[in-house]
Length: 569
Image 1 (cartoon, rainbow, N blue to C red):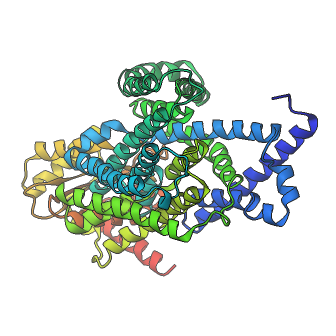
Image 2: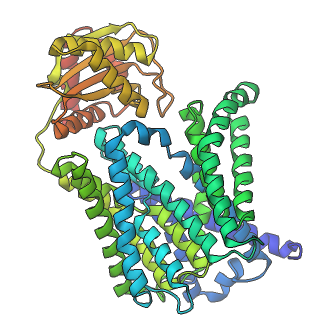
């Protein structure tokens, strides 16, 4: 490609400014309406692409976003970097250790949650590829493997956001969904990387079998020795570089290096960045604040450019096929909801919670769109199926939270304060670490319930090691379900100084609510967590209680005043 001219650079910068501004504005509007930001970002591209702007003012659309030429090449290069960095951030959301810590339930839901949808997608794609939008010259096996992967993969960021909005993220149900989604994403992307290798990548200049072997070896290395090495080097970087520039520069450089390697061996660059993100995110030395800085840097600049650029290359009206959309949505939902519901029920969850897990795992979102775009660029699918996959991703993401809410409709109101007694209230908790706090409050709760204190504390601590119970606003909710316990026990403590629970907002914890519930009281456990989340919606409430409630009566008074003022606001 020849160097960009003065005119080309002017148009490129103008187009990028318009694309980024439109994507961010529409993303903000989508979030105001409680929808994923990716919906607004995609809509920006549809408006500025051939679907709308191209139909109304084709000459203007081609000047800003041409289909060929140096401007198109430069834009493609920038969006490739953008999606590479976005996949690094997506990989950072995957905490492999949490899968093993969560145990049997996560493994059952995770494995069956990918095997059953994979089969549901593979069989019809193999026997009726043309009806599902395969190109006439596409390889039947490659197409079937792609569609099976598309039906099996999930969208971890979307699922996490849904669970946070419903105050279920740190519940056992939420952790099970997240752990199972981690397995889905990890296995799904490895399978798709192998699909790309099976296609034979001319750019790799190596046999297909060699590309496949190198892909598996690289994945194994990053998930084992790579994780170990990053965990060892990260403290040194944080100690000898400025924050956050040192870690940010290190992360981006390594992500691009891994991306370059997978592109070199014949697999898309995003796979390398994704695996690096998995290894980096699993490090115990990566602080929540650092993680959030990297996430914001990528998610608010690069990700909007990529998702908006999708609409620049496809006419969503011309390529819309209602029959194909309905088939794809039905196959995706059937395989995921039925497969994960049956798996959750087999793992021991009650019917309602099993259904909620099935609905939660059905969210696809950005991961599905990225997968579809790679298949479109690789020539596996055409525009019709790509549009159907995008619509399926949006529909499943929009409906998952709604169906989870409907599953738990009709529950009676529960107040956590009703389970706090004078024996389990510690207004001046002496604890320097979260382990000290859990031991003190867990012992109080266990003694009040007449159960073994050591067993109760161990159960809470095991749960805390899976994912932090800090919910932000200065509040942490360590909890566990205990076999043989008759009624829930809630212990509440106000540390004399802030305790570090590795909170998402970096605010030291000043209120600790420890919950022990019977092992079979699933819905009550979720209701207690939801009530605590409602009460402590802002940091002001945590500060008021910590400063003003010196005994249980004052505590109840503060909570009643807050509840009444909220009802009459």
